[in-house]
Image (cartoon, rainbow, N blue to C red; front, side, top):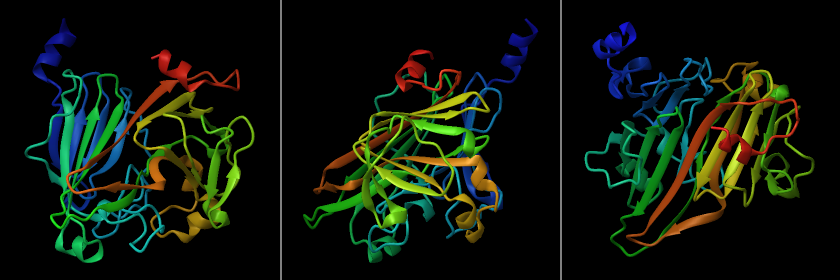
Length: 321
């Protein structure tokens, strides 16, 4: 009875607006069982996702610069309208270093009515954006913390050009996962697939072996990937499951030691404790005519895993929830 009284006295506030690092506005999402997420309006950027034990599931560098116009190193940066340097814009486009707004009139989203911990954000092009990318658009982003602690991001991008012109873009959720030791991590679901190796001038190869493991710098774009990918963290006995829609590609990135030392906003040894697996649309550009809308969604889950078999079917992970 005491616990129920305390719950009545201290009800969980599902959505709270607050100030973050350097006074930047952020939104805190909380689920009744204890999981949480934090989203900065700067970049529409998720910087924290914790399970119901309070364990941080995303990596943010200790040297991250929370100061516009620098993007925030870690969490889930939004790469739009360009991934990496695959185009004429700044690396990863401009969405991740613009100030987003809370959407006052979001369109209806198909969502579970029990999900109360969510926020709708919107970004429309600034004059600065239009100078470097002359297209009118509305980018709506819903971030939801589900009852089981799953984190869902749904992006809707609409062409609002009045000149009749289509536009094309590439996109990624540049998710930084927190891992115990990169040498003890494996990624399953990308076996036998073709990939473009950024470190070898985007040359195309086919993945060999049963699962992806890490012993040096990796920067690959896997093509035509399945809707589910699993990241197994042996030491923490935890498996991340990425489920995605509208995002056919998946980027796998770890900078390793030399590249880590060359990045001012990244600790020299932090590469050991992070891995980026990014749901993306890169190989085939997304093209929208005026009035058309594209949707790209990812759902992240963290579940206990047993590593003893050495093999783990992501589908079985999902069924065990």
